[in-house]
Image 1 (tube, rainbow, N blue to C red):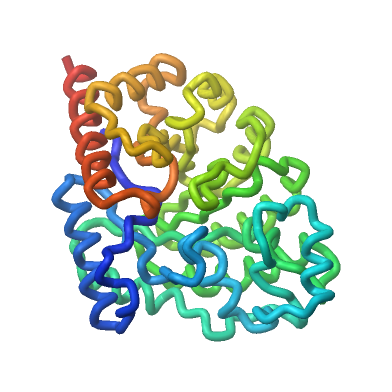
Image 2 (cartoon, rainbow, N blue to C red):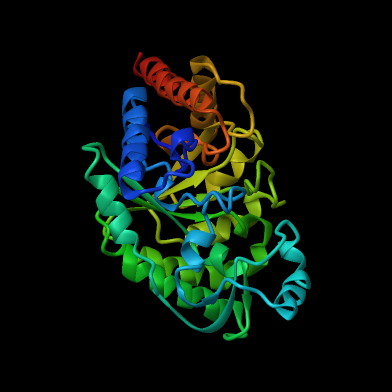
Length: 333
């Protein structure tokens, strides 16, 4: 059976803004989990509310929550820091760096197991824990210590591995929204990712998308160029963007190792329209026709829901579950 899940984020409840006490945060996460359960999702997530930061609404804490808590990273910038940052053409979509690396990176105050403990106490459903991957994090930092992106990524990977290895979630997912636009980074990116993945005790997932920076895609590229990279990952399934881009690139995934499950994006998170269950079912049927039965193991949105209205996100989740059921019913006849 194809499982339904989310990529991670969920619209922030309006009453959480400005009231981020531990008790209020607990209530908000409980609402998000219950909403997913009522929609019928097989694997739920905390909506990434544990890392929500109203000071960084364009990325919903995807970057800053991790790097600003690590020791060795400075989050106040001098003029020369900003000048060095602006010389990097790959970061033109950001106004400032996420941080400046000035000494060896270590965990600092980052405490991901604590986030998992809070969330897992609020649900009995299978739980997904999400974390931005080492390649993505290394690419948004101005490095003034390591002098080498591969060394920086591996230092970050060491911190993430130590923390994520202590989290017994049903699924642990690493998010990488930069690699698709920079296939030249593949050799060192795969080494850093696998270092983290090899330490996990859970089902291992990697999310690949083309970026969602304030509602905009920021990476250009094609999945075909990433297949050698994906085949090297020590991963159980991928979580892939498709609904926004269309499904012509599905053909490339015939070359993916058969033991790697495919998570198919069937919901467009950059559009307020709610897909019909029939649309979802057709997208699954098309994927089965192209890739063969059993290759798609999960369906999900293309990326996180955080920019949408809650009513839209809820409608999309319910449509996704009904569409999966429609597909399964047809397949069994």
